[in-house]
Every structure is written in structure tokens, then in C-alpha cells.
Length: 145
Image 1 (cartoon, rainbow, N blue to C red):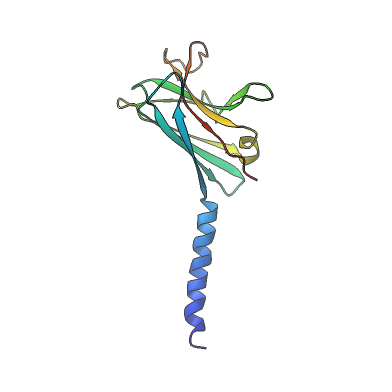
Image 2: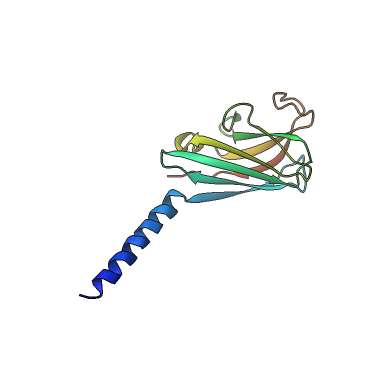
């Protein structure tokens, strides 16, 4: 019986840590250089939030410095569709070293409708101008059950 008090706190701590790890479970999406920006690197980290939403943090590296980029969710089949990730103009600006970060929240159900995440480069630095843009980074999203 002296063993039980030792096991009980250990079990409680284990269950607490297990709960924390599941709530903060994250999916890593490796973003590959797009056809318009060879050498670009990046990733997207998707974390489940308690309310059924997902937080998506996109990090770009070795992008063109001090340039404007937008973040898009894309389906190619059965027809081409795209929607901006988050709110506003879906944009971030890279720093002088070509690094940039963008964070957005989206419902898990909505995110599961999409197959790709793409980061578009806006050479005129206008996130609202969708002409003459190029794909800097892209990656496949995995559907969650």
C-alpha cells in the first residue's frame, strides 16, 4: 500500500502532460520552392486549438528580401479554386534577410476542404494586385479526420 501514493501523483502528471501534448499537437507541412522562386524554403505549422479551430503559422526563408507575399489555400480538382488564409489581405512582408512569418486561424472543417497551401510573391509589393504574381512556396495539406 505504500506504493500507491507514489504512483498516483506520477499517473496524474502523466495524464496532464498527455492532455497538453494532444491539445498542442501540431502538423508540419514542408513548403517547397515554387516555380517562380528557386531556392526558397519554408514550412507551415498547423496546431489544433481547443475550440475546433486551427492556427496556421507559415514561415518563409530565403525569399526575396523586403517583398510582399500572400498565403492561399488551393484545390486543383475537380476545378481550380483558391481562398486566402485568414483575414485582411492575407499578406506578410519579408525582412532584409528574406525571412517572413504569417499567422492565421481557420476552422478545422474549412481547412480540411483544401489540398494545397501556396505562398504568392507580389513583385509590385501590392498584395491586392493578383496580376503578374508568382508562386514562391507550396506544400500539400493533409486532411484530418
